[in-house]
Length: 73
Image 1 (cartoon, one colour):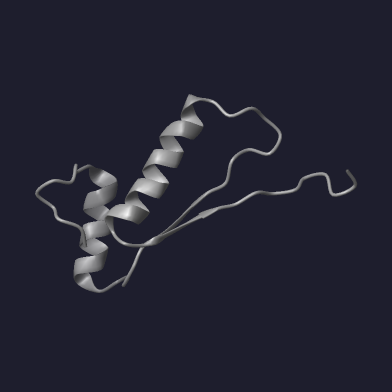
Image 2: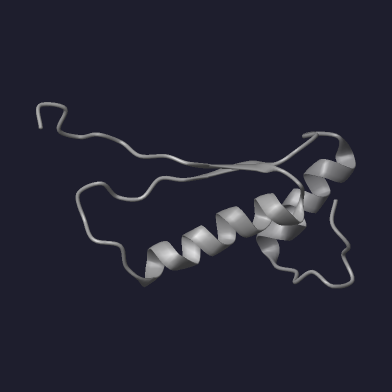
């Protein structure tokens, strides 16, 4: 786990901390699946920061996933 003194805390990080401490999970693995049919917006920026930030803080992995909803193109 990352240094908890310099890291922000919120309900998501509290759940991750509890799961890692109890042994329920050994690592973190997040993903960011942007909407393939729409434009990126501020909500995507928040999600990118959350998913990649948590992966970085906990030395985990984060996948950037792209879905092809129109394979004929």
